[in-house]
Amino acid sequence: MLWLGLAGFGVVFLSAALMLGLTFLRRKSPPTFRDIPAFTHLKQAIGRVVEDGSRLHVSLGRAALTTPQSASALAGLALLNRLADLTSASDKPPVVTSGDAALSLLSQDTLLSASHASGQGVYDPTAARLTGLTPFSYAAGAMPVIHDENVSTNVLIGNFGAEVGLLTEASERTNAFSLAASDNLPAQAIQYASGQEPLIGEELFAAGAYVEAGPMHAASLIVQDILRWTIVIAILGGILLKLLGVF
Amino acid sequence: MKLRGILPTALAIASGILVLAGYFFAIDVLGEIRLTLIGWAVILAAFAVLAGIVNLFVVHINKIRQREKGMAYSLILVVALVLTFLLGLVLGPEDPRVSSIFTTFQLPVETSLMALLAVTLAVASIRLLRRRLNLLSIVFLATSLVVLLGTAPLPFLGVIPYSDWLRSQIAQVFAAGGARGILLGVALGTLTTGLRILFGADRPYGGDHG
Image (cartoon, rainbow over all chains, first blue to last red; front, side):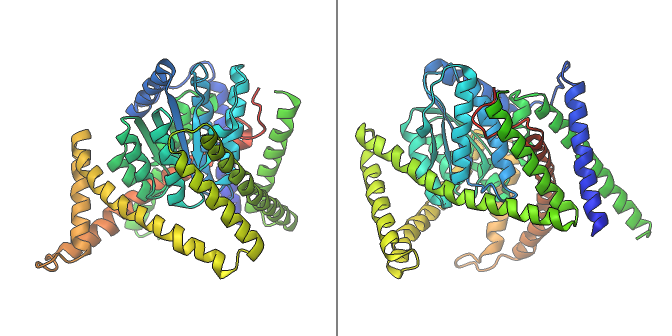
């Protein structure tokens, strides 16, 4: 088991070194990424939120922070931080819903942090809400927010299950823009069928880089690409060695 | 960054590194520190539930006070929350009368929402062709249809020949292969997200990024 632990540590250490190196090297010349229409449309929708005085709703899913699914929620919080910054000139602060209590506290903290950073000092602790602790009670609690609070843009990012279909449908009924991303495979299929702008697979983790949340977000996206190609080469090499009868 | 921002960041980074090291290296002290820190996180998460419920209560009380749209539902929620909380406090959460609240009200309502979701998804699938008419959408819908037909026998027609074989091929070959690819991507995203938190580049805590 020792070699497995060392190998794991090696991958993490290598990724960390690459991220730091790329952040430093690419600080002055930001990389360009392939076009993902969902993010272009999100930026346009954010512009509309600021212009027409409507509200942005960010739903962070229901990942508990002590589980591996928390990464999707943390990626959602990073996006929330950037979106709250972008909408700081708006009349109304973003409204955030989540299905996990600790996540709800972190979203309150993110909104507080964004209000300090914008220098406006307007912070409403009830703008970040825990709407339910079970999947469907969470969705049932988040749906009235979409319907009744003058929301024109819904960003659903985090760990969802099948209940995400109710949220995308609520968004559709109010003619609002919706971007949906989840790390859960059934939820991704539902989002593809019912969401306006679904993000598939690891596109969820690219959100920060596409909304220019910081140089490290861009660097982490490049590191993901490097690691992905390494895995592809390793899989193909394994197939070749198997075909040759090496193992 | 101000001092009040530095302290939580330093604590978070140190905790993250210790837990990570505890996973990779089989050293007793590191393992114990890891388990202790995770135990603390679980206790804090339990307290967060209380804070979250207070937040939910305040949101709905404000809705009632300001006579907002849907205040009747907020009133029902507040009354139900207070009653359930008091009953749980007096009788204890293990009492069958308290757990019957969940099985009598919460469970049927959630099951109804699940049923509603089935209809919603059927409508959304039809609407998909209007919204995004491309090859991927057609393949998506055709695959859904084939899997559905292969899952259950049709009334009067029974089992369609080869549908079961086709369903298993789609589910176990194409879908499983695609799912593994997506999950690998998600795992890589998880790794880099964790590293950003460890570096303090993303700080969803501490209340001050300045």
